[in-house]
Image (cartoon, rainbow, N blue to C red):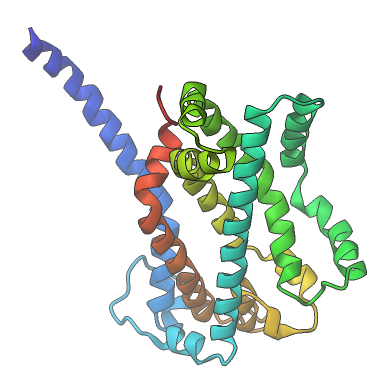
Length: 281
């Protein structure tokens, strides 16, 4: 009885695999073209007949990128901003998600709705008000002007996602911990925190990518002190309206992509479990 069923399912499975492969190719093609353009000679990049291959790969574009004196500083600034955003937003979101899930208080539902509303406001609409806010606070031309807004924009999504993970932890587990003599703080950090860690990893990916690839805030808040610029601003060094260095732009973009890929590789196992569900009773 199983053999005919397997034969019936096989065409559908092959179609699903073919569709998944096609989608993967479409998604990966821009990355392939970026890397290809980074290793192409200048003549091939500027050619009127672009080809999806090169017979004379060159590392000249990467040499120009790493030859920039401030490139290392930009990379370090981006790493500091992204790391601070991931750590701070993760801890705050964990505490906030625990509070709105485990405690009963007035206006709790209103607070959760406000989190959703905050997600609907476009970042571009808040850039100018945030600029004046940072100016009045004296935070322009500092990394703090990039860290604080990204933490604020990452929190609503992180709180909503972690709320499901905290809610999935059985209350009986919490009651058993209290009966065994565990304090609320001990339960929070030694029991609850490890259980919702996959959710924290999933939200950290969103926070990291948002902070790492940010160009709008970096361009708006870092005005005169280029030493505080981040890696996306390094692309402007190679982009000139009259004579853009597309090879340099693509090489710098490739270098920017590497830390994101490394981050994904490090957290991929917990990311899959975090997106797949929470703790089961």
